[in-house]
Length: 160
Image (cartoon, rainbow, N blue to C red; front, top):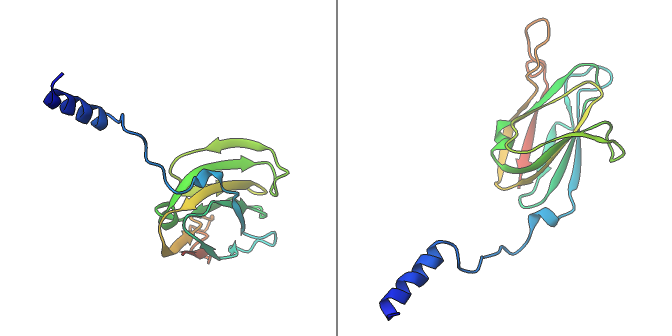
C-alpha cells in the first residue's frame, strides 16, 4: 500500500470515529444529588410556592422535590428553567423523603410538571447555563377563570 492510500484510509477511519474517544474532566451522573424541596400551595389553601425563590449552581446534580400539600392540583412551570438544565429524569413517588415508592419515571425535556393534591414528584437535573429566571408559575385555572399565577402563585429562580 502506498503512502497516499494509507493516509486516505487513516483519515477515513478517523472521520468514522475510529480515533480514541475524548473524555471530560468529570462524570456528572456520578454525583450525589443536592435535594431542594418546594411545596406547591399550602395545607391552608394559600396559592404560593414555598419557597418562592430558588437558587441552583451550574454543573451540580439536583433532585428538586415538588410536593403538593394542598387539596388542589398545581403546576410547576418554568420555560426558563427548562431551557437552562439537562434533565436526567422525573420520578413520581408515593410520598416525599425517600421513603416513598416510585410509581413512574419520565425522561427528556421537561417544561411543566403537574402535582396532584398530596402528591410528590422528583425532578433530577443539572443546570448547564446561568441566569435569572422570573417565569415560575402555576397556570391551573380556578372556576372564576383566573389562574393560580394571577392570584400570586409565581416565583423566581437563579442559576449561578
